[in-house]
Length: 368
Image (tube, rainbow, N blue to C red; front, side, top):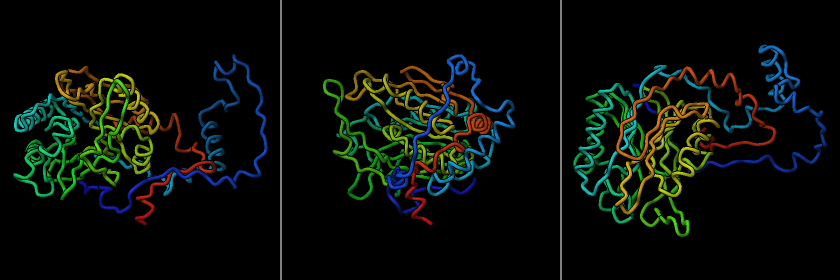
């Protein structure tokens, strides 16, 4: 097991988009482009070099004047060589009840089933050990740092990951830390050790009149650090549910060399049909990496009804595996060799306009 690269070891709290000052553009002049026919556009016959070698030279020439390396501050890290190229991921879409010990036992059985089907990485849903409600969070919260009897959910994850020699992205559970509560995802390595702990950064505070209203901030505290971790199955960036709406977080993870983003989440019956798949495909396409999500199964009688539809999306935004709203265990293959292929075909990292915009990773910048 490689040592974790957990962002929680760093001190800064937020990342920002940093536009280039307006004064940089005072001397810009209008530029008129030649007209192209609809036929030439349709046939992709614009003035591109005829060979792939010439195309790469053209891209390189443009990049030198656009300063793509300056579009990420600090500069983006190269994609690291993963520990393995191909493996199976298991997405455990679980039913959740008011019986905490039943939920823990049920999650354990699902993890074991996924591993028996070849999963080397298992992802659980958001808030899988507790009903999703502000009333329940304080009652079901666990002291993760204390462990043992103080955190039976994470004790189970640690034991199972070590016994089965798999990596587990432990969905999320309510965490008690002093007088605060967090919505927290724990990552356990194949040695059973806690590799990273991500506290949900963007709290789910929404009000869609006549549809859904929920305010996590009534009970929960927002996390303060992005979390990326090296595991036996690659470098993984972690987000929880509402975190997926903020593309800056995914861009930060991509710039830190993530192969895969994992988002345990519980979208509802209003935002789920509209945005759940859309956001996953957008995060994967924009950053040219894999995105995996895992939702609780739908319980129409619960106070909060989850959309379900746990999904794996590839680096071209293609849905590789998904399910409906019932309980299910999805087993799907991840092939990291595709990442370089996609990034060579669409060399976005070499085409960014560092002369026009920048994304600042405040945490990395302040750690220098």
